[in-house]
Image (cartoon, rainbow, N blue to C red; front, side, top):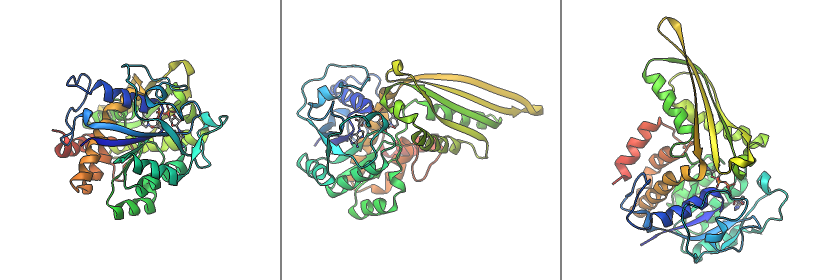
Length: 346
Ligand SMILES: NC(=O)c1ccc[n+]([C@@H]2O[C@H](COP(=O)([O-])OP(=O)(O)OC[C@H]3O[C@@H](n4cnc5c(N)ncnc54)[C@H](O)[C@@H]3O)[C@@H](O)[C@H]2O)c1
């Protein structure tokens, strides 16, 4: 039985996810973190529906839509024609800044629910733009109505909405999020270095992570309200690695169009050790957003489906803590990985 996934948002992250399913459709697992999660291989995952609101994508067959502008993710593999056509999505009154001058192609929650049912989707993966919190919540309601699990990759805090959480619990459906944590992106790198400094007894006083990138997601993120909300989520995630208070911020600071789907993250750490002597670290990390999301997203989809099918929704916390920056119960990432791996990595 394939794991039937629907996508909300056919942007760069979705593009690389769809390409990943093609790339790993055989037995060559080059670059894949976990070939088997909960008994499932990547080839067991199938995209059965997709939604967007951008006029450049709605109505296109999925293998074309994933390369339609303004997407800038690389073409890693040639895609064959898909049976999925991108359908109009839900848009409340919160369009992403990069879409504000476009005539959006919208649909209602009822229609999206109906499409999910027709496609027999098991899980709806939300990969719409940052800052569209009301739309992200409405997709959760549409998924619930259709009997689908919901994975929220966006920084909109859907799991902080108690009513939605209670409704999913009642329906015995998984609700996973918030804000996907990339495999080796700025957040986990920042957390790792903080953890190392703590383990080696350095008393950290200050740190920052400043990101510069391209792509529509970064373009949206530099709008002031979204920037501050994303900064809160990222900063909230990195501080879980340090058992005392210190000064830190983590977030996107600028958009550079020609960086495409790539990002450079600059880190600085200051602390003290023996005789209060100073220690200072300056490093940077270059990564590609879409590709960096692929492994974790593929793991989370397979684990969520497994939890759903064997009635182990009690392990949702472990899935969220492993794959997301803002789970309801954050734990240091090594502990989160160990618990997730014990449950799902085969
Ligand atoms: N490594 C990563 O790429 C990564 C990591 C963590 C979180 N995320 C989150 O995943 C989401 C997607 O990231 P991305 O880089 O693919 O962004 P993107 O800007 O490339 O794509 C977003 C897509 O969503 C569409 N969209 C916007 N509003 C919509 C709506 N209401 N309904 C349907 N579609 C809508 C846009 O048209 C676009 O196609 C973002 O919220 C981002 O913060 C990504």
